[in-house]
Length: 230
Ligand SMILES: [Zn+2]
Ligand SMILES: [Zn+2]
Image (cartoon, rainbow, N blue to C red; front, top):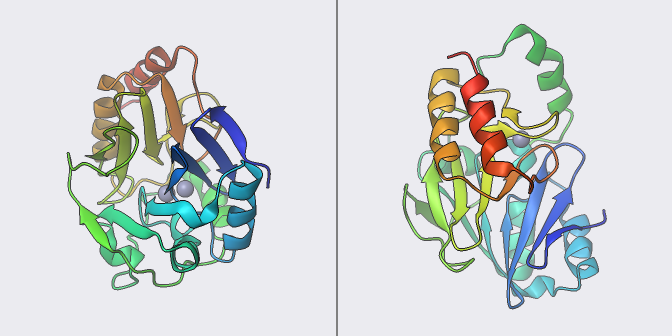
């Protein structure tokens, strides 16, 4: 897996189903999401390929409890001594204390959902720190947790206001341009969350699925949020 450079401090790691992002603060590293179970070797190699030291991985921030985002977190945290951070409402899913609630699937989403299930189930994974909306995350010159419920109850975006970077998790997707994400537990709530993210007017948008967007980003996100039928 080749890390894809988005900005000098930001790389995208692509696991074919789902993505993670690597952020560097002078070599101190944060992963936003962690790839599948069994992918830790690939992630460690990708961090090295980006010219960074995986043993400086300080934290893994999980946008939500789905397997394609959580699976690799435990291995990576154990290996490199990182702390795992998640929103309070998704922490029980990450720990395996509760099953992740089923999405309210639209007919056309069903085959995609079944394809997603080919990615291995995440093992129960510790959460070292549970956060709430508005809490600082300790990296990226002021990264803040933004609670964006609807995809899952504790879905969390990560906003870096000083850098104009927004990690939106799966509330938004960029697979076919900027669109509303898929597989939401509560579509109406997810749409409200997407509109809240649009108000942040990011210049770089990083989603769980699809390429990073860094041109006309705020306009594209606002247009996509406005285009969804409630
Ligand atoms: Zn996903
Ligand atoms: Zn998801």
